[in-house]
Image (cartoon, rainbow, N blue to C red; front, side):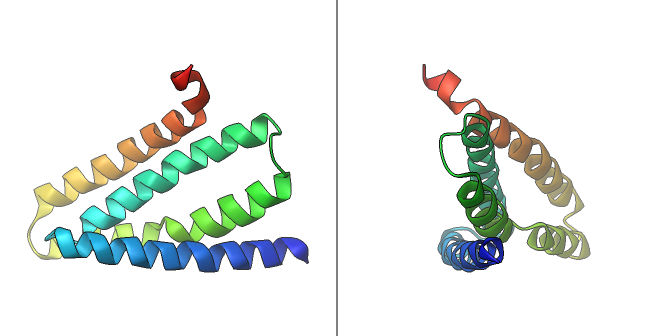
Length: 124
């Protein structure tokens, strides 16, 4: 039951953080997908970083796994917003921009997770 509480608490925090940051990005950028892209990159980086911490057993598995990874990052990053914004670009006849967004989202998110995973090695 504790794991469900950790996921719920982390999910609420991640969702609020995502909404706050997305609102800020929408203020500065014309296209709403910029905020989603940056949020997903930040989330992917921290996912890699947290996986590294799990591998090294630096912190509690439950806290990292349930609260931070599943809860916070699960609600902070979003595939539904990515899908919606991609379809919105295509419907508005911005197909090339949609393809660029798809490629940037997939490849940069994986790269950000890899950087997060190897963050300690990069700094040393």
